[in-house]
Amino acid sequence: MNKILIFLFNFSALIGCFNVQTPRIQQGILDLSNKNLDEILLKLDGEWKFYWMQTPEDIQIEKEKNFTFIKFPTSWEKNFFNPQQTKGYATYQLKVKNNLTSNLTLFIPTIWFGYDVYINQKKIFSHGKTSIDIENFIPKINPVYLQLPTNSENFSLEIVIYDPFVGTGRVETSIILSSLYNIKKYNQYLDYEYTFFIGMIFMMAIFYFTFYFLNTENPSFLYFGFVILLIGTRELFSGQKIFIQLLEIPFIFSYKIQFICEFLAVIFFTKFMRYVFPHEIYVKIDQWLLYLSPVVIVYILVSNYLYLYWLGLVFFIALILLMIYFLFCIFKAYKKNRENSGIYLVGFLIVSLIFFNDILNYFSILNNGYYLIYAYFLFLFLLSCLISKKNSKSYRELRILGNQLRKISKVKDDFMSNLSHEMRTPLSLIYAFSELLVENPKTDPEVIESYSRDIHREAKSLIEIINDLMMVTDLETKFNMRIKKNKIDEMLQEACNYLETFREEKNISIELSGDESTLVKCDRSLMVKLLIIIIKNAIVYNKNNGFIKISWHLEIDKKVHIVITDSGFGIPLKDLPYIFDKFFRVDNSITYKVSGVGVGLFIAKRIVELHGGEIYVESELGQGSRFHILLNP
Image (cartoon, rainbow, N blue to C red; front, side):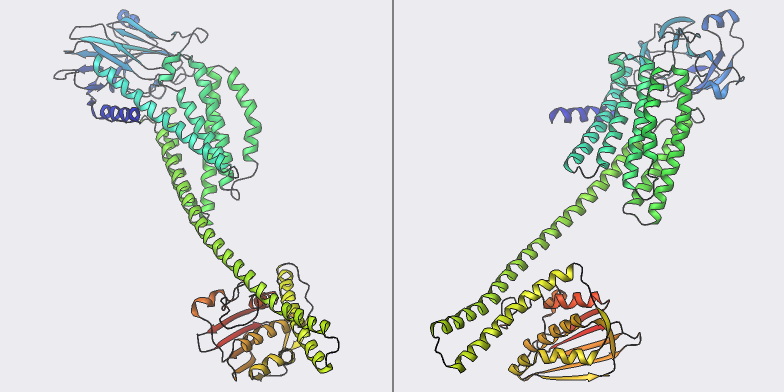
């Protein structure tokens, strides 16, 4: 941990210690009057002399004829006067006046071709094997800092760049001039910056791989982890990197590795997008890229730089089309209100704009720098936010599920308690009465008849409990209904007759009112069961000498509306949302001494739903209840 803090401290200190200036360079002349290069870094951007197909030795002979002025850094392809012949070499010359700094040092960043450095028309350094012959030309891409062997106030700096492959002569970033101490410090800063970014990229890859192994059902983490890993590997092999400098990796090898990483990253990113937006992205696009990959990789491995350059053009065009397609698909998802599609749209749009900027820089149409690495981090940040949001949502869902499981556990315990109570009582009575009959075979016939009625009543109660539990299972699976038209009043009368004994025990009055000709399409047995459940509840949860009013009528939409009102105890407001839940009982503490296992109203609601109807209740504690049943005619 201490090493990390020291690294971050040094990194932040280095960022703030550079005073970078861009002096005015006109007509190939740099005036260093009043500039102390021991304190500042100079970016040598400006108007340099440009000599096409001439070395500094040729310039001496020609006495500086046949030159033009060109903005530097740049590509000679877009400034060149003869676009038909751009493959070759060119000299960039800058004359420096009034140099007062000893140990003057030049920092030359990545130049994708070989080059020679001259001071006063004398070669002091060659980067790569420079030649206009492709067979003998071996470029290098690592940056260098070069101490200039001059103590004179005035000198000329010449850089000869060779590009026999594609003829762009592209120089992407600024050349820096300063003291040796400042240049070393600046190079150290670039190394720190590189280490920081590469480390962050690989840490993010490990982060996504870890997420995948924790949740293997979601392969998007695996796909995006490979995307990040390949991006990090590509950065290891590109340009201004310690890795390149330490291992002295050949230019063509590093270029091929970068190309392969880019192509594979596109494949994995396509698979990632396909998983995230399965309904918008064409199902076979990732398979096509996967089938194409062996051919492309073999072509990359056997090709020279020139063929790779043209393959790169094709690749960039295909990549642009693919990104436009992805944008279109994400926009479609956004229009359909897909989850998180808005964040993906904003992030991908920003990345696409930066990507197009970098492509324009690559082909020298623009010269404002490369920012794709920052786009990577922006997209990673947005995805990390999405993962955090998803994890937070999952945590909330788990917490809700935990609460629901606790409630289910409590319902299960209550159900088992009620069931054991409801079954033990009648079984005990049946056992007691039957035992009396066995032990006293000569019992009076009237007593035997009374015991038999009691046994029959308790056995009937057990059968009702068992039938209700079996009906719960039947109603939750397939249930064959026999639908036909039935009269409401007849089914209500049948239900009331079935419950006559219960009604008489509490002296409850039942009043029916409605059109006797009203018909409803239903399964008669199920509908009678529904009415029995509601009316029985209105009886058992009622007061002695109470009343029940049952009415029915046709609504404006022709639906049959049945209302069952009682003068009972009512239902607490807190329990109203749950009374139709399976195994839920308002009197789960057996407050009202009412038998049952809490499935009656669940069965009632399920029967209504099977008929395409609706059931709801209005109730207030101590004021009775009013059940409403709406059925299609």
